[in-house]
Amino acid sequence: METARVKPLPPPETPAAVLSFDFDGTLHDPASDPPVPSAFFDKIRRLRESHRIVWGINTGRTMEHLLEGFAESAFPFLPDWVVACEREVHLPDVDGRWREHESWNQRCRREIATLFERASGLLARIRRDIEQRTGAEWFELSHDPACIVARTIEEMDWIVGHITQIAAEAPDLGWQRSSIYLRFGHREFQKGSSLGEVARIHGLDAAACFAMGDSHNDLEMLDAAHAAMAACPANAVADIIAKVESGGGLVTRQAHGDGVVEALRHYFPD
Image (cartoon, rainbow, N blue to C red; front, side, top):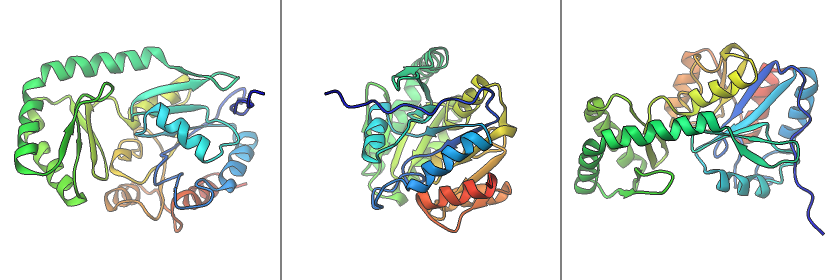
């Protein structure tokens, strides 16, 4: 017998708020049991009724890797949208089958391909510097043609500082960092701008958006230009805590998923 497919909750007729959650380190903690607290799903169900929210996962994971995380965490229902690889928007149908938001994703891929062709010399120079001056590894993947994995946080700190100094030659070149991992891309396509596109789909703007994350690749998503309501869990990196505090957002007392529930209770009280 075929296993029943997990589906999204019935959508609100007129969404009033968009909720955006980073996955690893924020909502999801593999050391916890369960990795995502059941109180999170209970709160989302109530907010669907009381605040007409739509919610999604905004992650650096690929879509395939994220679906594995949903299964591991026993999601009782799907999010209303997903941003994968920090830039590509996916939407589920009523039966829980995922489809791409093609206009956005195609433009994203086209702009990145054009940029990488134009900046090929600079990327080659960065690669030489990294391989000659650090022990980090450079990867070229089908969906990410320029990625770096450092050995330590301190090594990645140096790498980011170095590429920041020389990247002015290609002002559209951006990168997304999470711990010791970094992927290059187009500056205009990241978690923040992707959240803005999701809000646009639902007829909303930044004033109606909540975002929560814990690492450097969440910086744009937590900016007031994309989310008027911002939070981070207690386990967030120092730069994220500073970003949230400077914008008047909430740094929760609790970590990971428990911190997410705390933030939702703060911004969306029952």
